[in-house]
Length: 69
Ligand SMILES: [Zn+2]
Ligand SMILES: [Zn+2]
Image (tube, rainbow, N blue to C red):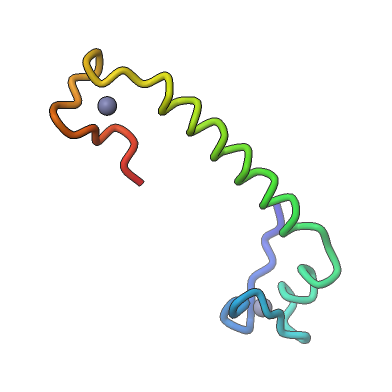
C-alpha cells in the first residue's frame, strides 16, 4: 500500500495536479483501477451478505438496521 500523501489537498473531481507527488503516482500508475476493482468486490460481497441476512434471526425489529451505510 502506497503511503505517498497529496500535497495538492486531494484530486478534485478526479483531476490530478502535476507536481503533487501522489497525483503524479496516480497519473503514472494503476492504483485507481485496483481500488475500483476492490470496491466492486466489496459491494458484491455486501449484497450477498444482505441477501443472506435474516432479520428475525438477528432481531432487527420493524426496520432492518443491520446494513445501514
Ligand atoms: Zn495530489
Ligand atoms: Zn435485518
